[in-house]
Length: 359
Image (cartoon, one colour):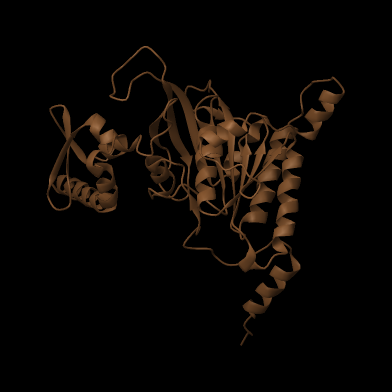
């Protein structure tokens, strides 16, 4: 009879001999999540209203200029990470993140809470992350603070070839060096941070697609960085031309950001939502939530008002603007009952389809 392999000994040997390799599964998933500052967007990404992006993964928010990427990533996500005691290391590749603007969004820019680097090269970003992780690993596990790296934006960084061409005043093509370096950055970073509870979130630019069969905007930097990301949110800039009461006006009062979750491993992908970011007040955490529950058929229209029947059978009836203001805590009530209601509606729909098929 053949002798069984000593798997535990083999696993121990491999993990000791190859640096950075780990064995086994890591279910049930990330332990630490950071809110995007919006309940509906959190839900589309993670399936939970309070969970946005996870530590231990690479998340990317890509979109046109002025679509709200930096507002969410360098504003809301950093602010919410700091509130959870997560230390943030920010790499500003556009030299565009002013301290006053970050303060206005609630970000603490003191070095006790945030370390900011101005970075231009992909290799520089790689060195910052690699050197930090080496030092981080020297600490005892119980002494390690949770860490989030932010790159705003990843697409603005240059390759070594592009830098040398600039120095030589010879701006010809980079022969595909930038997409390769970006892919190498992400691949190696994921191997470094996966088991350490360190997260990376980046913004990126996108451009319009000329492909009639695939009209979604294209993300700069090559397809490799999309493959390497665990979460990809595509954002599109629209103009906000309505006041707080929903009345259409001529003036532009802010941004309407169309967000589509192109990739997620925690919920159904390719779902979208529209968020409003007024210049005067910033984004409400409830914006987009009514559209989400309307798509789910949680509400029915009665004249100019929308009705929601809670789990106790009580009917709540409000105008749309009252819903958006979370009047009487109606949005909080729906969030509390969301998963039960969603399961009930899904079961009812499945029963209806099954009955129709039998007939």
